[in-house]
Amino acid sequence: MTAAIEVRPADVYADVAAVVGPKRPDASVCFCLSYRLRSSAENRSLVGPARGDRVRELCAEDPPPGVVAYDGDEPVGWAAIHPRADTSFATNRRIPHVDDLDVWSLWCVRVRPGHRKQGISHHLIAGAVAFARDHGAPMVEAYPVDNHGEKVDLTMAYVGTRAAFERAGFEKAADTDSVLNGFPRVLMRLDLR
Image (cartoon, rainbow, N blue to C red; front, side, top):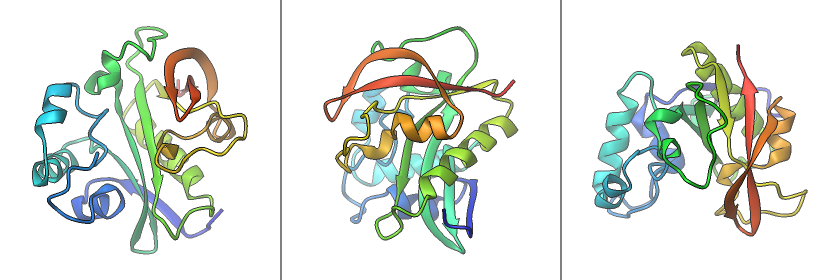
């Protein structure tokens, strides 16, 4: 693992945009809003610069929409984490609800090209868990693929792998009806109580 990595709340829009934003401001990329917004209608309505504007608003909220990993002053990674009730996972029919706890969902871990394979994703998971704990989360859920060590396409790797979350202390809580890149997704949990 890279020793100099620091994970901080994602309250600086420019740093979030550097990791998950589009190369062109008019592009309609995910910008990590697809799961963060409860309404799919709102997600579809945000195109081009409006997506960045919405992320800017989220970065100004308390809590912000996730955490950013820094190598010195350079933003090198992102993890999206927020209370499940504020995300589309609150109503997602493919991802089950295990119980009625006010869990936090951790659904995206992204490391910038040129910084991958240095352990930054492990720092991001740990930092996201610490962020949730600091905000009173009783439990953190993640929905990674169970790829049994097989290669996951980089465009779909944002959900993480079961092995990475197990390494961070998460345990499988349930199967899901969701499949990504041909791999089943599992519901993993880490109890913070």
